Image 1 (cartoon, protein in one colour):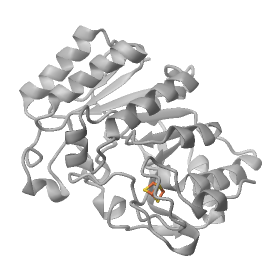
Image 2 (cartoon, protein in one colour):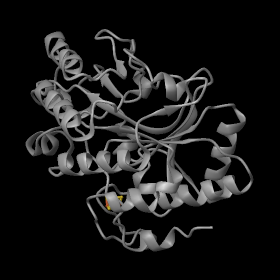
Image 3 (cartoon, protein in one colour):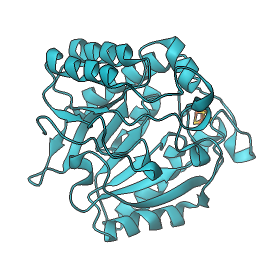
Image 4 (cartoon, helix red, strand yellow):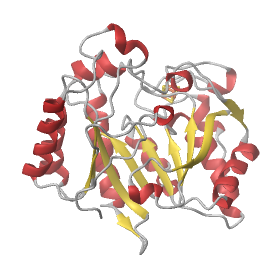
Length: 307
Ligand code: SF4
C-alpha cells in the first residue's frame, strides 16, 4: 500500500508548489489538510454521455481546490471548506458503495490536493478485486510531475482548457500560469492515454476529453485554445463546449464576469469548432438546462459525432 505521508510533508502536488507540511497543520493555497475531505458523492447523470452512460457516473466531489475562481458555483466546498473528513477506510467505503450502486466509473472531481489519500483508498479497494475506470475530472491546472506520479490511477482525463491569457486566468482564478500548466498537462494526458476509447456500450474506458467553458467576454480565448488544440494535439481529441456559465459567488460584483455568455459569443465558438475540423464531442445547447447543484459538471446537450 502506498503511504501518503511523503507527499504531504512538503506539498508540491499542484503547480503552486506551496511546500507546506500538511501533516503538521500547515496550510497552502488550497487549504487542504492531512485527511481527505469530501463534500458529497453520488451516481451522477449530468456528465458527457460516455461518462454518465445509463447507470450514472460515481462522482466524488472533493472539498478544496487549487484554483480560486471568482465565479465558482461550488465555492461552499471548493473555497470555503465545507465537507466531511474521510480517512482511508471511509474513503475506500465510498468507492465500494459507488461500485455496488452500479456506476460506470469513479469520477474524481477536483482530486489534485488529495491524490495521495485517493491512491491509498483505491489501492485498498482494488486489492479486494473491485475495480472501475477512474475519471480524473480537473480544472486542468495540474503539475505534470504529479500526473506522472499518479498516472496508474487514471483511465480517463476530463480536463478543462479555460483561459488563453495570463491576465484572464489571474483575474478569474488567481492563477497567472494557468495557460502554460493546463496546456502542458493536456499534452501529457494525450501522450499517455490518447484519444477517447469507449466500450461496446459507448462507455469511456480510457483517453481524454477536453472541456471548454465559454466565459463572458472571453469567447476569443476559447477559440484561441481550439486553434492550439488543432495545431498542437490534433482535432481527434473530443471537445465538450459548455455554455452554462452564470455569475455566481464574487462574479456578481465585477465586469465582465457579472453576466451570462451572449448567444453571439457562444455561436462564434461553435463555428470555430466546426471550421477547425473537430468532429468528435459535444456542444451544450445555449439554453441548456443547468443543474445548479452540480454546475461545472452538467452534460452538454446535443453531441455532434460522438466517439
Ligand atoms: S495541493 Fe494545495 S497545498 Fe499542495 S501545492 Fe497545491 S495549493 Fe499548495
